[in-house]
Length: 191
Image (cartoon, rainbow, N blue to C red; front, side):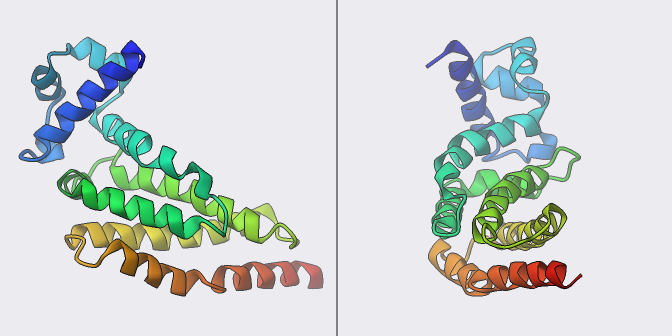
């Protein structure tokens, strides 16, 4: 592991530990670096702010593990792995989603979920004549739904199991995404 990775992981462990008892909104860079013996300058060499660090944790711990789930056959696996990951890091992500901020975690979650869903949209529409604008619209729609449901689930203390959540999401998506893409494709053929 590179020195850079070791430093980032030390900062990640530090913020995770501190967020067990301190809200992210109240947490300072000084507290994060003092907790792990790294100086402020080194923090800013790796991350622009505390949200950047939170987002890096999500990317390095969750997103990399679902990079192979960007198609229709595997999107439920990606969703399931992500929800289990949130559950295994419950206090950290409950704290993260309850923290307002311009670089907040929910915006990052949206961006990464959009990438996953756009992969699924492209997979399903490969034989359809759907414009990039319409694909973006459909991916936006599903991303807003998924992120909204996921954030609500986290804020509600993750009462329902990841299995149940994925089953519900699958019941909604099954056929509806293909139906929407087909209607958009037919619309363009008629005009």
